[in-house]
Length: 122
Image (cartoon, rainbow, N blue to C red):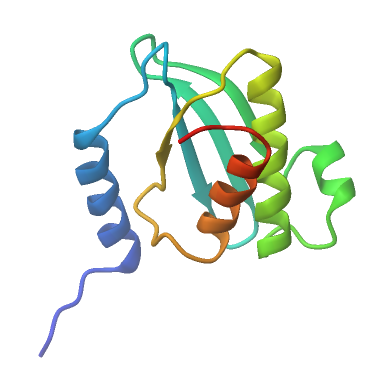
């Protein structure tokens, strides 16, 4: 019988491998993206201090009001534009993208593309 690891365990293992390769600094913080079955989350983190500088999620009232659904590509695109606008307001223009072990397609790619279009560099 074949024993397969759960998808979440595989994702967490990938995320740990990715996190060993890079971390967010003060000059270039990390844009971490997480998606659950119902919501999308994005935050910009300075790993040297261990502090979240900017955060956005589809749980926020003003973000949720703009969206029809909170777990599709349109929601991911909106999250990307909002995180980029908030980051630029705080003076953050360049980040390292952390896909969180997720495959770079669909919602994760939509967040990255929208953030790039809104002015973030990575």
